Amino acid sequence: MQQSAVPELAHTHTRPIHWVATATAVAGVVAFSSVLQPGSAKAAQPAPGTDAKTAPATAAPPDTEGVDFPLECGPVKVKVQKKATGDLDGDGRPETVAVVHCDAPMGTPPDGVYVLTQAAGAEQPRVVATLVDPKDRLTVTDFTVRAGAVTATLLGYSTADVPSCCPDVKTAAKWQWKGGAFVRSTPVGARSV
Image (tube, rainbow, N blue to C red; front, side, top):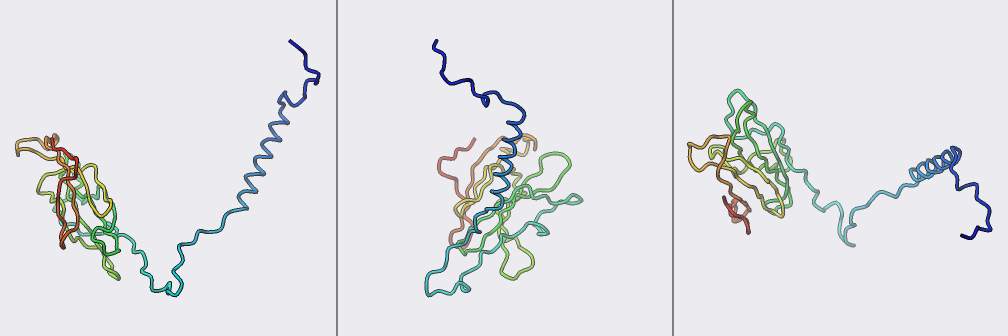
């Protein structure tokens, strides 16, 4: 092995002062980068000749807080298990779809699926459709709102003798707004058990 003509360099052996210098340099870069922030993002500008004030404002989706769901729970409270939002009827205002059940201390309470809307200027959202009625004894899983459709997997019972703990029927469901009502169908590629 041939020896190098360059003497051993001092910086190849780390010492505490090297770590302090590195930490100081990193801290300086972080501090400097926090001062230099990009400008705030701007929304798309209206086309020339249009008035930005006439563009429709994006409405907030209805909140489930304080909504009177058509669900009889007796002494226990109503619980919103899941919720999702989207423009289901194409009017430019989002709706909220909520999976709701009674907050029972034991067992598997059946779910109800409700569509909420809130008119401009209204104080409280209101239920405008029931997609799943709790009387049907179904549990809702894999719940989504996407591209104007509500999809879910429904777990149910083949007979009244099947215990509530153990649903034995699994069905995929999809609801879309058509002709002034929500129409239920089975999603493409879905299979029932």
